[in-house]
Length: 470
Picture 1: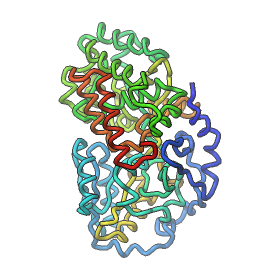
Picture 2: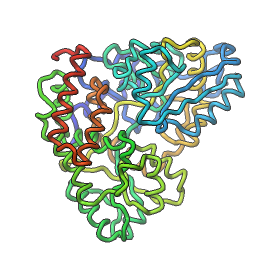
Picture 3: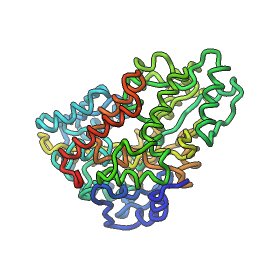
Picture 4: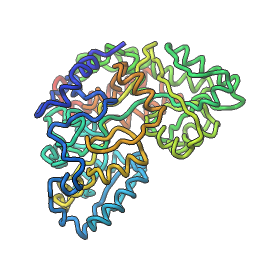
């Protein structure tokens, strides 16, 4: 089953990569900006890439980066977004340009509110990291951040259409990847094999439940479905991907009606059903008893040492886990919500934003240009193979467990954009919604009560934003 918007994406992906000046923007409620197929090899960007044989300074357009000498760039990000390779990149840039990078790594649960406070009070870091463009509106990027549409690195982008703001078509952040957010179940092959399961690829939701039941019965205490609900952003992965999968071909049409205030969240039976399914996994004993107190950072050990069998998360986790536990054999599959075997993914990437209120905006823009250079980006992808944002950067060898998802679902078009991406205009309520999911797990709200609360918050927020139809 394929979403209508996905068919359009596949049809225009090659054209997007080759066409100069195409603006992927639209009003609220329209389909998401088209994106190149994430699995594609780096295509030609909107302007010819610099000769890969030249120096990084030549590739940067012979710019004078002396403005960076002696500067300290404050770089704010969250625990989940920070990678050790950032330190490696910063050390190399310091050696080459005399520029220090001061990383401010904020706990995930505090990051959203802190970013908003800093932007609204002008007490800002030089650069901050956030989902691009899905959080543009939530963080007020058009109001608070520099327009980076004409920066030199834009000409080297593999997938420029993806990062353009859905309202004004401008680029407010510098991307790290060309695609991201593949939401799948990653599992320990040995643990499942010991339970008599090899190469699981459930095609129905009942088949998924059967896998969990088998592990519970034959796994000698192994946790079937590991959860890390101390970090609520991981809790909502089941929901944001699950609802979109359950809706299938109706996902874009349904979210379009929500954004126009033509229907309510409570009018969509798939929302409560997916949440009830999630609650039932807990009630049926498939989750770890300490799920409310453990976070994302505990999952690699749990899965790779065999304490747990499966973990629903994003592709970067798999790469990190394989680095820490290279002997762990891992597989992956999608949860077929409503019997739709689709891979939920995001129409966003990680981006670096430059607040207008910063004290050294010109130096920060020069820093971003340097940060984007192949010399430094390659340092990141050597440690974290993936899909770079830039056509002249080597993405390295993607871990097989992720590449198999790309081959099976992305290249074939059997994927759907998660709800957070389709409903980016209301992303300001996301954290509250994720907490409602926790309340449902704890038995404090029924799924129907959760989405009544979501509807109230949603209408209030959209009215505050002056959204059309509210």
